[in-house]
Amino acid sequence: MGGPGDPPEGTPEGAPGGGEDEYRSVVFDESFVRAARLQEFSAQERMADHAPAVRRRPPLRRGLSRQALVLVLLIAIAFGTAIYMGVRHPYQTPTASEPVEPLRMTVIPLAPEGKVPGTADPAYLYEHSPAAQFKTGAEGVPLPASRRTAHFSDSQVVSALTTAKDYIVRSALDPEVLTGGEVRAVRVLLDPDQLDQFDQSFSRPTADGRHAPTGWLVRFDPSRAELADRRVRVQGTLQAAEADSSTLEVTADHTFVYALRPAGAGDEAEVSLFTVRRELHFRFDRDDLRLHQAQLVVSYVQAGPLSCAEDSTNHLRPLLAGQTAKEGGPAGTDPYATGSATALCGSLATSAQPKV
Image (cartoon, rainbow, N blue to C red; front, side, top):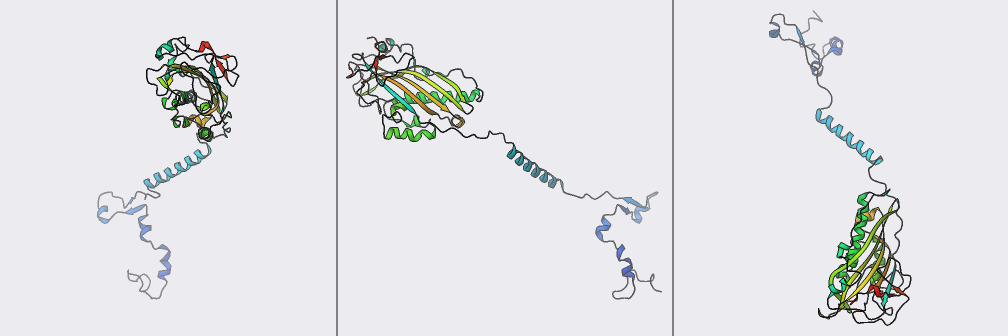
């Protein structure tokens, strides 16, 4: 017989007949069998009472593994965060800052009306002068109570005041600066845009209101005078205010009193007092506040006893105990008073000198 009588191995290769074509569409491969939801029990399993002929297989788990899902999720979060930060970042957009102004400086020598008083005891001179109640050193430059402004926080205002104080201390109280040597300690506190003017002031000092070293700091001619007491007396004020939404300003007004004696004269030489009144105007943008640096835009200095005939551009050349000025100036100017001098050379008021 033909057809159903074919051997179970199938029709031999090349044998005639249409069996292969007839069942081609219902041939089940291995993957199809494994994917079946129903599975027939074996004969031994069906021997148990009431055993069903088939059982339902658990569905195959398809899709990505858990690790792959976590990785995809992390990539999506990182990509979304990058887009969000690019659109709405927490940092303030930098605004175009105003160009830094060059320092405008005025140094006014104050000539004594007679001989400069002196004694061998610096403490006695201080006690009998208007500086008797002044603080010593940096204690005389206290920070005021600070308050935030419309566009600057408390910490930013404190930063401006602290930088201004550091500049004052380094430029008028540091013995290395006062003796005409060190300048770097002052230079590092300046805005970089003012460094060229600062450097030119010391390499090519000129009395042009822009390039006098004594406009940047206090320093004495080391060939003429030295400190008899390193504890400089100081009194003054600091005030901060907002100039505009991007600028803070600090105004400093301090009087410094130094005890000096002739250079190399020894401890037995007579000592005299030298007074410097400084008004400094500082300006700070947000970069200055962050970098602890300042723009010094105005320096107004009165100093004496000095001779109006001496050049005070590069160094202050004080008149010491027993010396007199070769030239005087207009009516007496008291550096302890709050008014500002208007002359290019003034006379040191008698009330500003110690009573010996």
